Length: 233
Image (cartoon, rainbow, N blue to C red):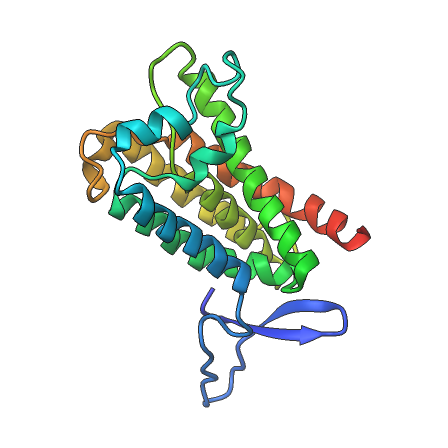
C-alpha cells in the first residue's frame, strides 16, 4: 500500500503507481485526512478507555454477540459487539488494522458527509456479516464474540480490491486479493490451532477466526456493490 500514490481527479479518488524517477515522492500516511477512519479509531480507543472501568464480564453480558443472540431477540449485539474489547492489546490491534486498511476505503467513498455515511455503513455491514458464520459454527455454545476484528478484516478485503484497481474495485480474483486472502487464511488457521497464545494480552480468550475470514470475504464482495450504490445516491 505504501507504493501507491493518492491523487484527486474529476472522476474521484484514484491511485497511481509511484513515479519511477530517482527522486522518491514522500507523502504522509494520512494524506488528505481520512477523518472517518480517525473517528472509528477514536470510538474504539476511547470506548475501551471507558469500558476498562467496568468488569469485562459485565460488559460482555450486556453487549457481546452470542450464538443465541437472534433466539433471544438481541440482534443489536451484532453492532454493539464491534465496539467492545477484551483488553488494551485487543483494542489497539484492531485500531491499528482500521488505520491501515480503512484509509483507502474511506477515500474511495469520499471524505464528505455522504462518503462518510457509506464508509460507516460498509464497516458495520462487514462486521455484522462476519458475526453470522461465527454463530453458525458455535451454535448452542456458551461463547461470546466481541471486538472490531471482523469489520477490520472487511476493510482489509476492500483495500485489497482497491489496490488491484488502483483506487477503484479491481477483479475479485486479482493478485492483491488472492495474496491478502491466502495470507489471512494461513494466519487464522494458525490462530484456530494455537489459540490466543499468539495474540498479546489475550490470555485464555478464544479467537474468532471464523469472523475474521467471513469479514474479509464480505469486504471483498461488498466494496463494488456499495461503491455503485454510493454513486447513485
